[in-house]
Amino acid sequence: MPRGLLLTESPNQERLFRRSLPYLREYGGRLAVACLVALLTATSMALVAPAIGYAVDRLVDRDGRGLAVATVAVVVLAVIRLACQMGTEALLPRAVELVIRRLRDKVVERLATAPLRFIEAHRSGDLLRRATAELADLAAFTRTRLTTMVTNAAYLLVMSVLLVLYSWQLAIVLAVAYVPTHLVLLRLADRISKPASAAEASTASDVAAHFRELLDIREQLQLHGGGEKWLGRLTGAARAQQRAVLWNQRGLNLVSAAQLVQAVALGALLVVGGLQVTGDATSLGTVVVFLVAARQMSGAITQISDLGSHAVAARVVLARVLNLLHRTRPRPTTGLPVPTPARGTLQIRDLTYAYVPGHDVVQHVSVTLPAGDRVGVYGETGSGKTTLAKLLSGLYTPSNGSITYAGIDLLHLEPAELRKRIVLVPQEVHLVTGTLLENLALIPTRPTRAEVEAGISSLELDMWVAGLPHGLDTDIGPRGQRLSAGERQLIGLVRAALVDAAVLVFDEATANLDLLTAERVESAIRQLAPDRTVIVIAHRQATVERLARPMQLRGGVLGPGRAQQY
Image 1 (tube, rainbow, N blue to C red):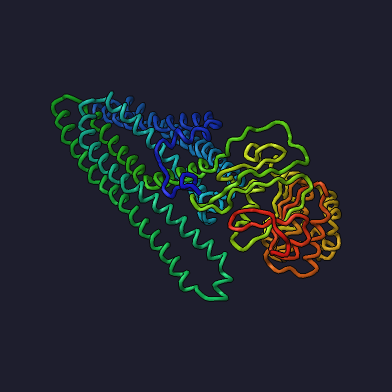
Image 2 (cartoon, rainbow, N blue to C red; image 1 turned 45 degrees about the horizontal axis):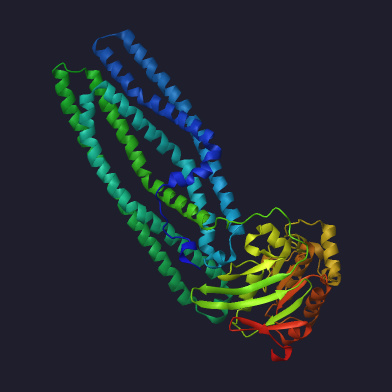
């Protein structure tokens, strides 16, 4: 698969806001209201320092009435701040959670409709982590930390404006003593945290993928050993994650140095402010305003700095999710409004496919399959039979050439229309935990129980269903583990009959089937509508002999065959 179509472990984090706009616009009003309430919270916090400064001046002047007014003002501001803070904590996480929910829904939708080759090119653990755990981490950040960051950032902005209006001289002192050094520390921490957080997310995904693979091969390890070697791989991935975490911690350690900067800034304010007060250049209340503000601003900056690593991690997660959405965006189609005919000719012209450029698995295949044709494709292991099946069913995009149904290129069909006309029954039919009925109904048309029963009868599979413990309501276990490979393919055939697809591509199970199940599969294929095109990827001599038109695939090249050549 081309590298440009694969997911990036450490995707670009630039212009994240602009790239997120399509998912933010729907909730722009909610976000604007939440930010406005956060600004009111910050303003009420910022006005506390001037109120205290006013109280100090009134106290120096022995103005009891003015002191009482200042005291009431502080209390009122505290009440306003509390109310606005509660409003911010209610509105902002709710608005952002709606955005994340939309992202989550979009991720599920895109993965469900992503090209099969994209899914096969990635480890399931990596995709699973991006779609679940990483989005959950992003949601947790918005619920518990985003409000604090937004409120403190707004407070710093409002407070800075107030201090400049109060005394630009002291504002310059505070800025010179505090801002440059702190910005340098934050910049250094950011330079460490960005790649470190990306590495941490990537290694965590790698560990999750190893665990998922361990579950898939657990039986193999138990039967044939190799657990120690696999444990070594898992340990290596875990150590890589540990190194990334320690690397990320270095950035956090730099933030702690901000406490020294705070002490220097307060000392500078005391010296310069004291000189101005003794020289009658400013009032004691003004100096108190700056001291209180400096302390509060330092606390706000410290909180933001402490949450900086979480914010960087959230940026990384958002970038990885956007990368997933970008890589799985739907391919452009003509969106033909006119439905395709219920039956039609499948035309393959100069079809070529390569997993790796320069190594063609299917080479220059050209064949015409009219409606009702029954074709058996056979060949040696590795000749490209299963790849051809996925190409004919539209699951893979050809490297060159074309496949048309009723004269329309499969690439130009809407996915729903394509799935309605061409159905693949793979060697391993995918099932979900639940009953037989629930699994048979996993098709776009959402059939009723009566329709499912009619579909079963049309393939003469009533006896098979009746022989199950609870008929259609039989629990088939996790991923259909209680059914044999042949029985799973029977489910695929019933689904195809319910969809009434024009073309059925049947990739015969390679596992040995018991005689009764094999007869049921063969009978079900025979019962399919006579005007339906059936392409069987055959793995057995008997299967080839039963089909009217055998074709041999040799080295990726398809040509006429004879059953006795199998």
